[in-house]
Image 1 (cartoon, rainbow, N blue to C red):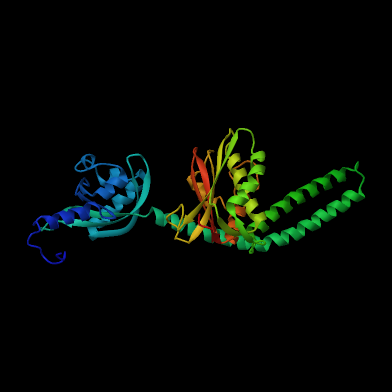
Image 2 (image 1 turned 90 degrees about the vertical axis):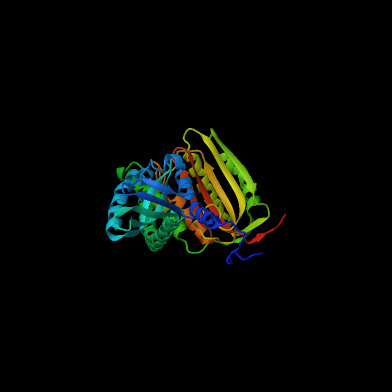
Length: 377
């Protein structure tokens, strides 16, 4: 066999050109060239695939701007002008738009093209899809934000709890001392009721900020959910179809059963409350090797994935980064602590939480817990 680095007299002379063309077309980045008017004169298959177009509708027809989201056009124009003056620009993230309207963030590097006389002829550039990098950065930012809130909640919750106990105690003494006909008796009853509600919120903060999980023991996830399924089915309101699919047979996790049950109830209740007119809630388990649902998250060994999906109203993209913050809620009622508690409990168990949502389509929450033991079938 002849080495590819040693010329082969029997190899056709045009093969290096074909190899270069193949490299251009199928490079892991998008490659393009535009003339001085911005009209595309070359574009590789990678970028065409990302934007959902073909060469016939792009080459000689479209400009770079037509492939961008409208919000990114001014940024591209500024970058193009700077590239023409400086000869090169890099590290600029633009939103590229597919034919179906889907947008993705792409980081560009572009160089100016000049003819032998030094006349400007256009731009050449490459595009790198940075979707997963942005997701990863957002997750890291959210993690740091929640950890900061967690530390604050841990310090504040216990102090507030002590104050509330004093308020509640004196209110109870007043209720015992005064006749029920006394107008102040009603005021004290309202104070006691408010103190109890506040204490409930504080307990939610304590659950969110608790540094150590409760007593953990090996737990086979599918068996645990099967035992819980009867109560879940009896609790769901009319018009909601609860489907349970257990696919993690033999996978055990180290978990505190009370905390894990609390997580499941929070997720299922959130799911059916997102469907005021009814719909379907799907609770599913599976064993995942590596990074699971989101390829932006580094591989972390074998986990059990517990997912809860609904066909409800979904979560607007601008709110996804806030849903685990204590007291944040999109509902008219509720404390806004349910998902915060979910995040805290899962973190205590060495796991992670991910959310996928589309407005008016539904939401899926993914819980990943490390596998303590996996019994192969």
